[in-house]
Length: 540
Image (cartoon, rainbow, N blue to C red; front, side, top):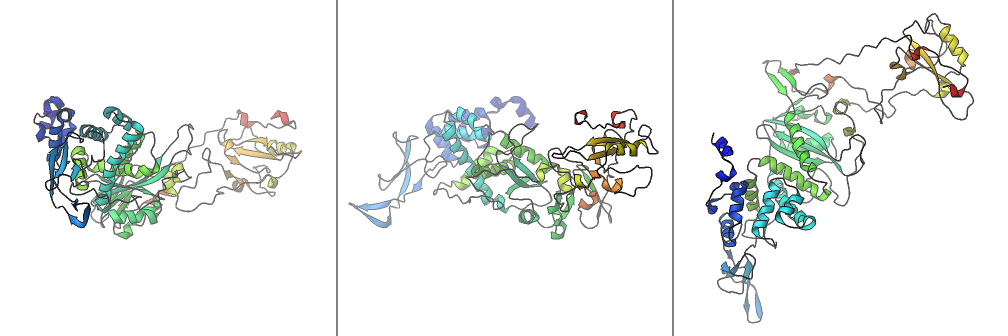
């Protein structure tokens, strides 16, 4: 009820008056933010020191000087305190109490060290970035150059996310119920517009813990079991329930100490399994990880593109935002304070590349390749065996029996079944060949005009009687179900071959195989019911 009243009251009425009592979470309210950082510089510095963003005092580590010589290894051991200095940025300086020549800037060891921007401008950039504004909008709000300063500050912020992943997320364990999946990130063209081979394409493997909504993602070089299984064992506790799609790399998880259930998206997005002993049902779906992909890809859609060396920083940011959802401001500055302790210079520990699951080349572009992403999800989940490139038998023209048009017409018309009264219609086409005077005809036999373009048969005698010359039509039919612009589709395996479940569970909602559509009755007066044949090449 209090939360609802606060939303009705608005941010202005919910803002506070005492700026020294502001917390990091209070800065999400724009009225609090500008009420604080539009004060005098001394008050802003005092608030930053109170919240651990600036140094209050520091031990002096400068070396003593005896005349013109400096004694090696002997330090001043004084105490550096704040003093006013109009010549320094911020109007203050750290000066040693024993030797006033020992001085340091007030921003030493802080996140703002080395920057010529004022602290309010730095904080405004951080606020704009956390609010998911683009770098161009951040640069306009702060009043800095977009191509240089804004890009550099965006990298500074993402370094905090990368360090958080290296220190915390890469050791995190998931338990309870975990959903896993993989997705292809990169440029996608629609309606044949644009260059499909431009930009980078990277496979991303993700794991989501249902209870805490914690997401862990990794860029991977491939989707084989040798790449994905070690990542699962690193982050998922043994005995955890895992939901996934029917990708074959996950089929051994039940043998590795996990409770693995699959749902085949080709048939449905929810699958029910029943324990044969207790009768308890388990509802399986991967909606949570699919929703995580939506938010992750929206992060990259806001940008015009990113370089390969910055891609890992964006992935670390996606994981950090998911973990700190609802407390972005407090979470960011608390993470920053663990890196910038103010006692010494910040010590970044993360490595490059940040993820050990792929090889990153900062000077190259990842080009798209022909992977399972080029086909539908149902096809990718149904490929259990290797299929040779030549998936259908081609009948060479040389093996087709050379007959004249009159002989073929005689076989058809002279048969017991007339082409006008039979359901099966026949038409004669000429196969174009170069360098031959006589083109061998190809007979396309079908039961309807729509099916006439799908089956090739060799010419032979009438279907009414037994054939003694040449193979039968049943053996000579060749499937031509091709994907537009690609190779023929592979044979779809049975759904039962892809279901994975622990011992003692059986699927409940088994969807039957889709029934074949009934063939439409042929029209005896259609164009395909007539024989079109002529010795004139221009006739066809």
